[in-house]
Image (cartoon, rainbow, N blue to C red):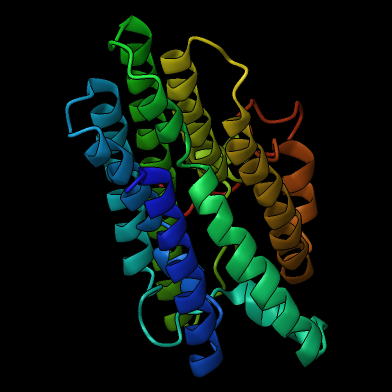
Length: 278
């Protein structure tokens, strides 16, 4: 069977499963639970359809597998796969919408849109499957950039993990954590460095398809574009919650780049650093 058709069947199954599970469990993070898994499956479908004999597709599949393994580990250690591991943002959003409006949002956005997006970001592998040209120096450069971005995201997530462990210990000891949110390490140069590295990896994967086809004019750019749009909306929503919890977050916003790492604003006070956030 054509690998694109196989991918469509996987998409349909993922949509059905995540929607039914959300209705049964009344938790709405089921797409989050497959986020790091399904794109890996899609890319290996195309690599497998080429008989694992196309060096570029094999390389793309290995890189996406590394991405998926790291993200799955990080999601698991935060309790994402455990009962009650629902994303706190969905809880907040449910409180702002009527039950019927949220259920429609769940079906159309959380389930259908996000599952389609997970297929779209993997479709540069389809481009590479259609244009099986020899691996070249550009592929090697892109692989190195991808690994650099993967390392950056790993560091950012580890710094966040360390900070929240320290914060819990401070609260358990009856002390008020200071600072109350992470502002050091990579988070001194970007309010969301992990978001930056995550998006950038999928732009690199898109470029693999472009190298295979010999042109930047590929419709699969829709995947990273929509992913970036999703992250913009998610960032705005997340920061609105942070600002409501921490009034001092406004000063952090004023001195720190939203997503793309950059030097803090001139004259900005150096944030206090927790011992475990480094």
